[in-house]
Image (cartoon, rainbow, N blue to C red; front, side):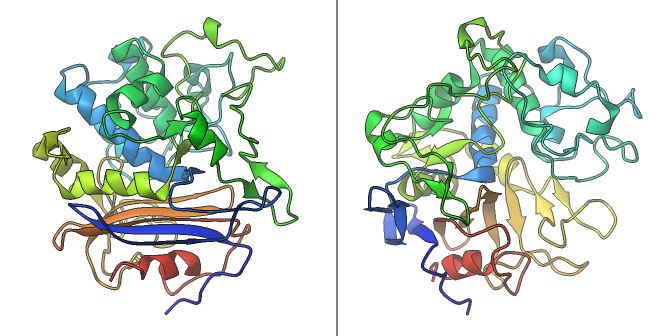
Length: 377
């Protein structure tokens, strides 16, 4: 069994079934200066688990007939998106959501300031895998999600942060938000501060106030969102990882998956849409993807699936149990939302202040993730 995390690590976890919470726990500082302890109701920047929530929004728009998973996204974007090495291969939402688009991260090319555009970033051939055509190879890429958010904005006529609140967060009763845009004042007051190893604040030291600029400012330091043209820069509200959400609210998202698209008895998404998200769009066969040392071996639409046996896969976080969900890793946070669809249970967890290179576990996950995953009995 993985050892308990060191005292500087703050964590929260919630186990649940389709009806409600089964167990929970939390420890550590939410705000060291204020002496505030973390609880399961405190929002944290949850990192890449955000992608699963974005996928829910895409599926809702698809059910409304406003998006088509298999349409060339160039149609909605208003400009031609192509891998220059494969100019005849279209790129679709299905490929973007499953990281098979051939778009790739180059440093922080998915962080695009106000005043710049996704289109300009994707003019650079370095933003593409020149060896593998769209649809043929898995390569996890944060840059896929600014493209997805741009498509969502063009299809809806709404800014991404407000759209995802209307489509997903508000209907599920979540006091959550991307980049602190739509969270309540009460949630802002409970923000979990993320710290560097030297104790300095790394992110979200809000002191109860909404940030003056909700996005990465323009090159001149300005932050006038009134001039923003919808659909030109879906990176602004960090769809790849900028969701602030508590462990309790993250568990509500997990319950939606367990209940096949129903929330409190009401249909939020059809069972068919949940199945489309959670069935593997890609499974590693030894040659068809980059696994990140065995971390990624099967992926749906905005959803990881594990475990996969063989071929160097090291993704067995739950000791042989088949799980769907997503992991997160950014700004010293390690997080996860995982559900066991067969047994009808799941877990949402987060840990902050883990350091740049936290202790490794028996799998491709870190020891703190394995320790928290073991809370799901």
